[in-house]
Length: 142
Length: 430
Image 1 (cartoon, rainbow over the protein chains, first blue to last red):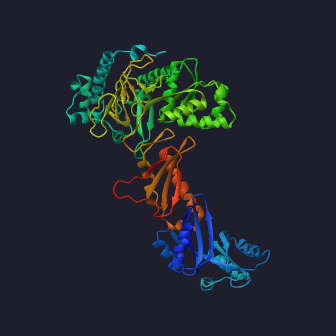
Image 2: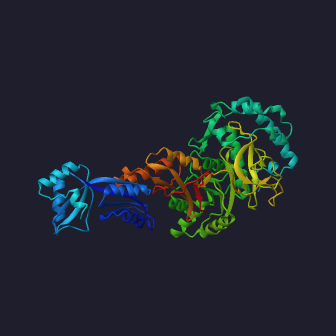
């Protein structure tokens, strides 16, 4: 099970710097990162080397943070690569809440993180169609 | 022109004679018909017969907004409901509004007060009046409406909002008088300008503004922007609504309808009377109201009285512009807002922390209120839409209680100020 961390961030100068600093000082490595925002606030979502430690450090520092279970899939890094994976999910009747890609990857393939409502069905559908999924051990050490 | 010369230019003795007679009758009616007043007067050992001179009013206990709340909705009415022809309400301090009623005579008296005030400002039967107050439970629109009809002016009950249409109507119908809040007048001027309407060419010539105070600087800006004379009037729904007092064209204090309202100024801490000309809290007693008489109502408004005869010829007592409040009430776009109302909404919402801040500012000429709350429920972070829904939910709940729109800003936990002792949660940047 891969745990993603979500942190509530105010849209104010220096907020993101502060959060990443807190994680950095605790020796936590950021592996993938995405930010969604409105004019007033945003949610920072990330995959880190030690999610449990990250959550406790963030909470100690007064942040609202939570973990979510997500899927990380290897996608062939060529035109149509992502489309074919999304097609699998679509055929299985699964809608994607959000997704983002990893910056670092262990090989030539791209790594895409998916957040879906019915994670069990999504995992089976992807596996049946030969999509390679990463487990937490792989991901936290990238 | 003076609408009611006999009263507005009466000698002090004549006025005080009317005031004493009416005060005695009001106290008697309150004592006989309203349980709340009877209990309070009994507790103070004051009986209607003890009011022998005007100064004896000081023996009567004060009435405060909480008394209205505790007697919600009708328990302070002094007549049976069959004699009540109108009900209005204003925002209460804790969610429940304060409710007031009017008999047919009360409505006539109210119209008389407005007619005097409008006439003093310069309104005539030839005028066409655009009323931009909302026709709602609030007293502003209906109060001015009936009074200006009584005066004989042509009233356009356009109500609030839809400012571009307001400007078109003003142009097409040839409005000569604008009624509303001063900040709305300023906004209207801005919109007119954007629409390419030359306000100098409009027939508009006079403004009767109320619902909120404005500074002399703002008055000058309104006068310049709309090419009008801007006058101010004062009132509150607990007493009657607009019409307690209003400026004449001299714009030098608001003439009080003294035969209907007895105004005292008391020290805001000791609650003892202060000499004429000294600032203090205004306390008002209605002298002729039937449905909802009120004894020594503490308005929480700070002002002073001006006893000298006015250059317009009226001898009536004037009151200065409201200088401030003794409580934390905010006036946002003419609507009274108490921080306690906002707090009441916020404590009922689970996903946010108990701390909050209220920021009031001017956006152009319009008041804006923003409420900052801390997000503490981490579950909401899973879906962006959940946070947006929370924001929307708080906004909606605030609207249902305050009757005006407030912006909501979600902030990080621990980011709002913590207070030891008395909290200062309101920042008014206006």
